[in-house]
Image (tube, rainbow, N blue to C red; front, side, top):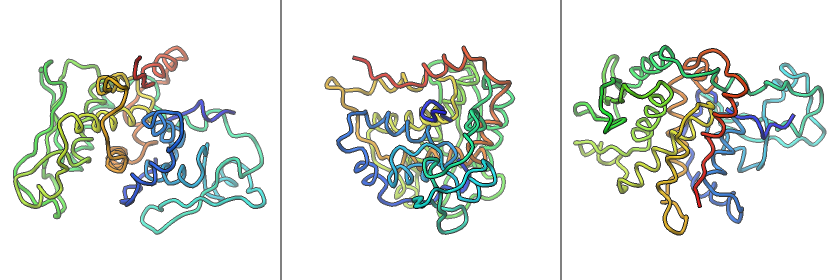
Length: 310
């Protein structure tokens, strides 16, 4: 089975990882592939890991296809480690570190062809699935509403004045995300991902000194670019039929270059988005309906690919 052709975390991978920007730059230096495509390829290739851990594994062993702990390889797949298997370090939820191994360092029965299916959405995004995810936003002190506003597909507003160093109290709302109700459920969900990107990339300036300290002073264009990348990656890992990739073309300069971004901020935000749903596997089950047909799968892949244009 070619796992490169398959794509889609695990909750608890939200720890900070200082230096991710420099680590990632070092891993892609000299490669002919576009850095955005490379980032997406890594995160979609390793959906069994949270975004941070996927990047950690890629830094240690570029091209890893499927990783698991030694007990998981034995219990779940009937495979065993090869002599000299190389352990890869990842961050462990609620603990220090954990060791995982790539499939190439194991031997035994072939992996199931649907090994990554649990991390993909099943068919189309449903209204019920969107409502379930929107309800989860309240657990992160984020409100959600829909209005008829074709001129503004989505926007996020701070609510009140609060100290970000203090955990939100039960029922407290600190942000409100508003989405155009005319969009289909998949587009609304992608828009929510975009707005969450603004929140978790620290794009929103607050009125207090503490809140201003967290604010990243970027141009509007760079803020929108980072938020669009968060949405594009979230849709890519879930295999959501979304035009998020095509939206990135508009940021290209005449020479084909893109605005600078913080990979660390983007990966951090992506992890936060997935954690709202309880991890990628739970999020996929939460928002989707019946399994997609082969034709729908192919169409979805076309829309997820980022084509920077000529």
